[in-house]
Image 1 (cartoon, helix red, strand yellow):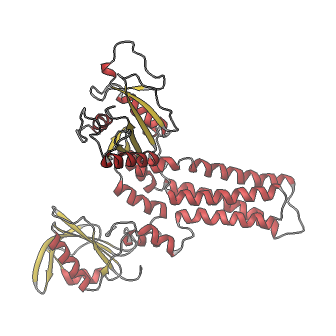
Image 2: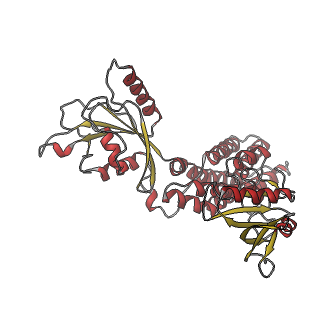
Image 3: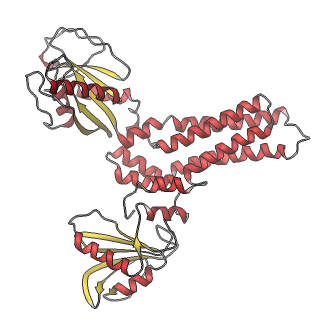
Length: 441
């Protein structure tokens, strides 16, 4: 990606719509506009929408609204223009081609956001939050991404980095004066500083599962014997008739995957084939797929028929025993102690089941949390790297090894924290992050 030229892209999804938006950024933006845009009245002023026409070879192509932003007061920090034309694949593509012919080039995925980062308009955590907002599928995920876009995570990381920087400065001050040993009081203060930073990092790392749940959802496998009511439970959780329900054993022969937003959390629900011995090769494959879904799940709902006298299965971690068809039981009927009583037909016990699922993955508190942590896998890996380096530095100081060795580890921690916000970046990191963006953003 070259930040010195002018880029352009269609910023709205393909297809018919009321409007399409074409975005331009770079030093040639004013020149391009003067060649293709004619205002209907006064010339365009920055930050004001101006009515006019797009023209080519003396012919009008469309009536549009143009909004301009002058550097550095724009999203990218460069001269930026946004052309709102009538929606339609052909028209938007034609205007983009016209812009490219006058000196711009097609933008790469995420290049507008990358330029905003390079020009100091946002740190990497805020840039990542842009795509999290676009991809959010639940209100909680959207709120977490909005908090990150405000800079809350970036501010926390920068505060941690400043703590490490202060510690490095104190330690290297002693290294510069080798004749003076670190006195016990000062050494303890240094170790306390490192331990405090380490504790703060561990607090952020504890939210890694929450961030994954907010972004990706909770994987739930619904398993059990044939006719236990697995498909009925799936339909009840979805609020629609998605799976075929039948009294004939083996009706579900393949896994059925759907998503549901429950209490603000995205659940990825997988209905599986009944677990039983069978000679039917198709059903055998369905049972095998059920096993794979069980292995990949965050939660397993093991559904049993409450009306049958069966031995409850052994439950593994993150596995819930769900006793279905409780509406058919006689009053006072006994059930396994750990079973959650529900009725997929009436909806009885569904609220309790959803709460148990949230408790099982440790995210029941998210809905009432004033702030939502949303660290992603990249943040997690770098925080773990920073924490490991701090732990090694702490050990070196405690065992009175040369201070230079501890300083090396502190520098490694400083570098890892800096990579999270982009304070120390490499082209590979930027390429990996922004390549996942959509074109035009």
